[in-house]
Amino acid sequence: MAIADELQRRWYNPAATPLWWTLPLAALYGTVTGARRWLYRRRWLHSERLPVPVIVVGNIVAGGAGKTPLTIALAEALRARGWNPGVVSRGYGGSVSGAVLLDARPDPAVAGDEPALIRTRTGARVAVGARRVDAARLLLTAGADVVIADDGLQHYALARDIEIAVVDGVRRFGNGRLLPAGPLREPASRLRGVDFQVCNGGAPVAGEIPMQLVVERVVALADPARTQSLSQFTGQRAHAVAGIGNPARFFGALRAAGIEVVEHAFVDHHRYTRADFDFGDAAPVLMTEKDAIKCSAFAQPNWWAVPATARLPGAWFDAIDARLRAGRGRASA
Image (tube, rainbow, N blue to C red):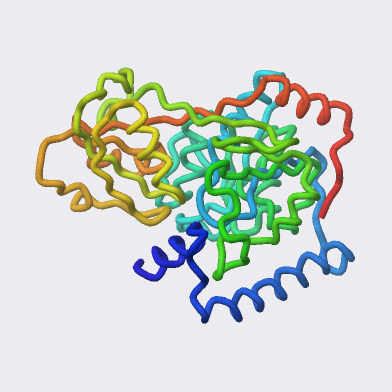
């Protein structure tokens, strides 16, 4: 954990230099991933195309950029425009090995926290599996007429019609170096090949689609039917729990609502136990939806999930819809 924290500090601190041992590893990583992309471009490695359009949502930076909220917003927008979207995911953090179609109340320990959240939040069919092509086929049997691949930008085995890359509008690309010397999964030049670049927060650059994560209400973990405005906590002290790629974004959103935040940051996809919440007082606990979905079994009355809703221009969703209907999605590998 200490090494991970130090790496992240150096990635996003302009004055910091990478740890010396990360530089040769980054060079090796770049060589391997670059060769893999080249093999797919040359079609020496095979990308499988489905009989329905595939939209990939991903990013080139390790950690949270807002992929899951965008996937949720996209699924809801497409359904509102007459589509029957399904979502495919690797299911990171879950125990599934083969391809599985999630039921209406998925266990995040089995399915992974993000797929469980997407299924619960949207009601869309979600399939997970190490081989995403196999999982996507399950969505076809369930009637999906468009597949959204969550965090699939680097998963070239599944051919795609539309690529959407999400960029953290505040942290951007850090020091611009590849893992582990920097936060990049792929070089920044990779973004020149995507169809849409979405900027989550901050100030979008020319050509980027603006996205804002809005937090307005809270949901009681012990009784999901009980909701209230986030503003009810304004001026109060509360424990803030976040086991996501960028906990600071969540803490900042609560502070912007006037809440006195006591930070509790956990690693991404952390598996919680009741002992993780022994904070020594009776102050309310606020957590992200991704965290909350793993804590309902031992939730207390003063624990609240804070849903984040991605807001994007309606005209952009219309453009996605029009492209799908016209069959003009680019077949890229």
